[in-house]
Image: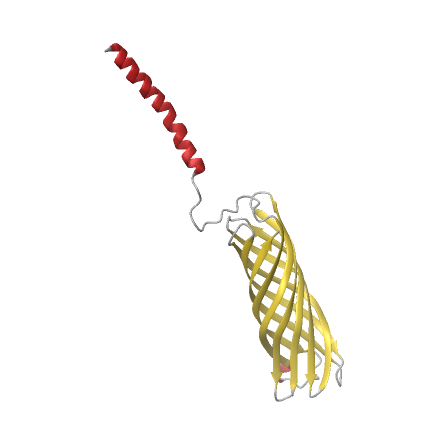
Length: 220
């Protein structure tokens, strides 16, 4: 009986030692839930390239009151499509800093029948900094920097094209789809400043826009 009892005790002790180790192995090797992307610390780091589509609306203001616009303002709206190139790096705990440049082909247009003035924003671009928070598969962020746009004004057949230089700011969120692919949702307000259009007579026109866009970024 003593031999049987000693054997049982030895077996129980061995089993008690083995079970916690096996349980720990199961916890460590447990796979992630299907559809869950765990970016982990620094998962947003690296360079990326992407494309986006969106919609914009804004106002052209005739600062010299030479175009005959009602209240010297012309509303404009339309689509945009473009590409971007940027990079991110993690600083401290959860803070992600980065820089991005983008260029977009624009269909933002405004027309006033009374004065026969037509505005087309042909393209727009920006060079911006970004500051975000690493929340795993999500990264909310703020962005701001320099902005540029090319626009054409047609005043009853008298046409002029100029470039505008200004600033932009906004907020967005990136959502990881895979380790290398993310969806980027962004809102921006942009003040493109004033430019002088060589019309008869010359007109100083200021541009401001609001844009919303959705894009895909590929990290490489």
